[in-house]
Amino acid sequence: MSLLVFSGSVEQGLIYGLVALALLVSYRVLDIADLTVDGSFTLGAGASAMLVLAGHPLLGLLVAPLAGALAGVVTALLQTKCKVAPILAGIITMTALYSINLMVMGGRSNLQLLRTETVFTAVRALLGDNVGPLVLLAVLDIAVCALLGLFLRTRTGLAVRATGDNPAMVRASSINPAVTTLIGLAIANALVGLAGGLIAQYQQFTEVGGGTGTVVLGLASLIIGEVITGRSSMPRRLAGAIVGAIVYRLILALALSASVTPQNLKLVSAIIVAAAISAPAIKQRVQLAQKKRKAVREHAARH
Amino acid sequence: MLHVTELEKTFYPGTPAEKHALGPLTLTLQDGEFVTLIGGNGAGKSTLFNAIAGEFLPDAGWIELDGQDITFLPEHRRAALIGRLFQDPMKGTAPSMTIEENLTLAYLSAGRGGTLRGKTPRRAFFAAQLERLGLGLETRLKTPVGLLSGGQRQALTLLMATIVPPRLLLLDEHTAALDPATAEKVLALTNEIVREHHLTCMMVTHNIDTALRTGTRTLMLEDGRLVLDLAGEARAGMTVETLLAKFRSSLNSDRILLPGSSAV
Image (cartoon, rainbow over all chains, first blue to last red; front, side, top):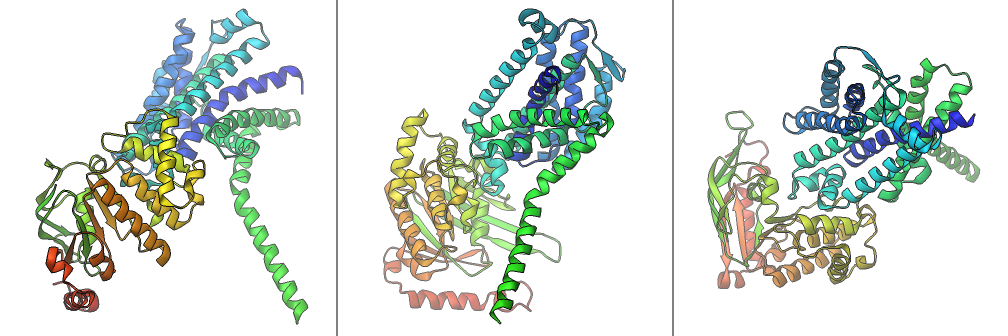
């Protein structure tokens, strides 16, 4: 793997690490499989790209998470106020977002940002081609991790965690689960929107179907991260999400260099996720089978 | 303190499953009163608790707590005033969060909230409170609650519910799922905490002896109505046998013993 491919993978990993952080909040902490993500990623990308074209790349990175948060709020309201099942609520928002994303992108299905000023061209000019984007993204990720970690320790943050951890407890407490779900999903989708906004400026290109599979990709990163750093404490889990995303990007780069064609990448991602999530269950079955065989052998030996 | 007036509730009205669950029921609890509540299965004990806690709105009547009409107050708003414990010790704590995080959440969520700001003074306060439980939890603040036993979790839940003293404490058979020794310990703790904070408290129990020995007043429910209200000398003179006899005669009219017959 060339240095260029390596640093590119790390940079993309730092961007998609934000998606992994989002899934840490929605999937792990709130225990909701939030499918809004595929839509809110493109929403953030589209909003960011339009503002880049209008000459405001920095504003794009502020609007992208806000737009994502709004999408999260819609999903949360569908769940808590309209009693739509969580997965369906996400699917409904995601579907609606397809049209909305086209509107945001001015009716075009893709946007080219070549030869326009983005935050990355700015930071390259400032710090150099090689380290500029890396420094920007690393600083951003550390800041996001720190803020998220601090938030999860506050009263509201603890309430969000308890909502996913023990709904029965939360119902009998002074926590309003509708509010904590809304806050959690807004934060998660804000992170996804920010990732989308960054990727649009990073790749200088965005298209309306660009967010497809973001959930699976984020999950893969999250799970890889959990294997690496463990789940014992919140700081570890936050760092794990970022590390997992970087490792996942490196695995993809390796797969590409090992002649997996780009159109098969999503298949590879899906297989990684399916394998990782099902690993504990498969392990348990294998152990049970071994235990049975051993018991049968010992029983036979005694008689 | 707590005034429940003409409270009524029928579940599934107008359907074959219609069930008259509560009332009309009128009940007043004085400040600092510790009431034990007995009655057969389906007598309406938990329904009364759920009505007070706001899990459903009553068909008629109203509920006042501390001079405030809470009849239509949403459940989570009432929870700031009311501490609750359930039979299932898993219901009251968040398993993947640590003891400290659970206590912090309870401390910051209750009523007007705790007054200790900052982690260090709070941690010292939590440790001191945990030490009183006598379960060695004060040295395990960083342990996820999921690793504790049922008895430990219930004791912790009791502490969480009272860490900022609530206006009313509702205990719904909170020792029923524990082994006898642990149940006794949690009950003793309950007595201690209720006395110390001068809490107004209602406790459901199926143990007649406990019902008479604990608290200051004993109520019996039957078909959602109050059928017995014992306090003072009448309660002091009541024996387990006499109360059990009353309980039996109440149960005899209870349709749970006659599953074939329809509701009264």
